[in-house]
Image (tube, rainbow, N blue to C red):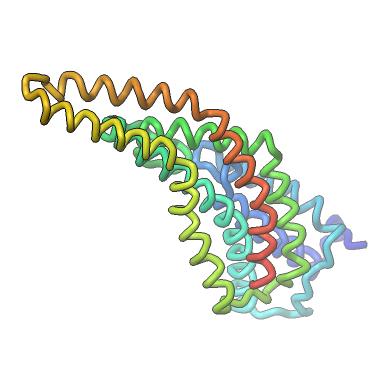
Amino acid sequence: MPNLLAFDPAQFLGFIVIFARVSGVLISAPVLGDQNIPVQIKVAFAFVLSLIFFPVLAAPQVGDNPDLLDIIVLLTAEVGVGVLIGFSARLLLAGVALAGEVIGFQMGLGIASVFDPSSEAQVSLIGQIKISFALLLFVVLDGHHILIRALIMSYRHIEPGKLELSRALLDHYMGLAGMIFLVGLQIGAPLIVAMMAANFSIGLIARSVPQVNVFVVGFPFTIALGLLLLMLAFPFFIEALGALHNQLGNILDSGLRRG
């Protein structure tokens, strides 16, 4: 069994290779890779996970006297594997934020935005509410455990330094990028259709009764209706997130098989 405390240079370099892949996951994964988590905690967590994996995983073979350039390329590839694992999960949650953005715009809250510390960007109020609940549910349903399990399984499909940017891998992540719009449409479709119908009704009233001030009546009505529909649709939102969470393991495994 490898012993890190022996300070064998080959074994120590193997530990650094494992640490690089774990760090890649913590860079891009939702919750674990959020910007509001201090870097010191991320580094400590990556170090502890690497210590746990090191005796279990086969130590990467780097040779007796590896070249510096080869080591840099190897570590870069390992970080890339970890980033792809975390990025896959983050892409799915991006669809939830997209649904919130569209719903907030139709409610008339598009101009109101807040600072999202996880992405360091301005997002709409409704988008921030939805993504916050999505992250909470991600933790409650052990999404972080799925990422760690995918990290372990990645060594079965992609050996250290063997990452290949194949056409199948690129097609897989292009499909994941397209899923942002699909997930956003599936989650936000009921409220989007309802708000479109409400705006259409307000437009008919404005045409039928010109004396009605649409700006005075329309904005409070759409905001109140949107909040009411959000409350009524919340159980279905949780169910949709649960179904999306159940697909996460298969999506990660499919991406690793193409690496």
